[in-house]
Image (cartoon, rainbow, N blue to C red; front, side, top):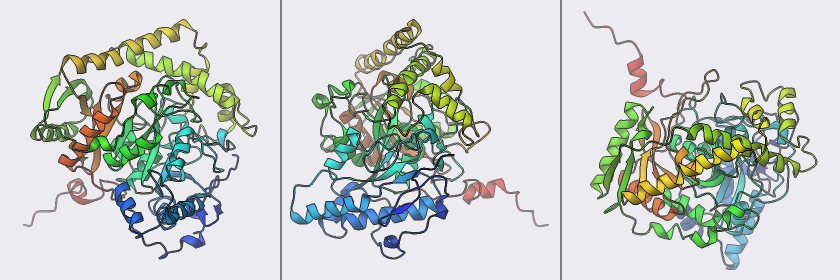
Length: 550
């Protein structure tokens, strides 16, 4: 196994160095116990900004507090393994932010706010962009993805990168969400033996644990919305083309998009304001500037009164009665706040969509990853998918838990001009976006709604992922926006409610989500339980009944 810089310490900040357990790294001298006192847990962007303006904290102290929390909770303590690499320049970046504030310079929209990004997004800070794979341990590009450049121009402090399901969960059908060869397995902070879902598992777990103010994930189908749902967060998969994919390790140019993840709708809206916009290097974003809104301003006066929401009944398939009970309560809340609920019992996605989507993704992946690897730094030895497959076979760690059957199927595809690919692409385009548009228009709806996913399942290295949920694929294939907001919990494990809309309808969805969030107040912070079975009422019910006195 090759070594890379993942766990060394530089300039008092944490920078991870390969192959070493988190517990092996000594505490940096500038982050000693008792030095950092600002409490970051559950702090919103608005609260942090207020405290920065009031001089209750500065950006260096704030960044140090998050770094200390990462060291305490992620590297040690609960060992979430959600952060895969830290930016050695984070404290210097924070100091520059403090100097701007002190000098009266014009400040960015996220000035001094610490942010985490998924480790398939490039950043010019000396960290590798690995997609979780040992094959990309040397992928230090020293360039910022446009979304990262936007964060920096807004004054945000990119403190590091988050672990993920390796290759965005597209290596094997029996993969384990949240596991990567580089970062190990991400744990869910609500119950440490349960899945954080994928592929943006590290971002989900880290933001739930308040290891940064907000985070950026990426989604092809469910990879922002599932980690958000099972980690008690708000997550938005934007319209494809609202946020640039340039310098993001690709899966599919037809479905990939970065997306914001936070503990509140307002935080997600604030982050989307910054990362959204056109990029000449990503043709899909040509219309972004024209359609972009002030998403935070759109939340003002948000209400459910008079809104029409279409219930997608098919999305309840496979979900437990306990989830249905939480969902029924959510519908009651929506009605009580003035929304009209429209049952869409007859609609089901076209049966051909599943196979068609997989076919498109297989073709796209080979084409897109080959192009990405061909332009990678010379130190990256694997220059195409075939070389990745060969690398995995040689590496002692890569195939230890599951195989690479999806890689092999992708390698067997014949290019984007192949008739099978074009037919699958036509199927995907015909039966997703137009269907969403038809449902919303014909029923005069503001959005479609459904439960997002089941609660997080136990991590299972034999059977693999067990989390169910069918709502994400329709907007993912269509390239339409999908917002998930906490709606409650089952035995303490979070579940979310989804709002799906037409293309470029993020402002509408976020306003609906904010109104529901305000009405339900459903989110609860994580408790870092080893398991839900060992505590409280569940533990008492699992134990034998007390013997009757005679």
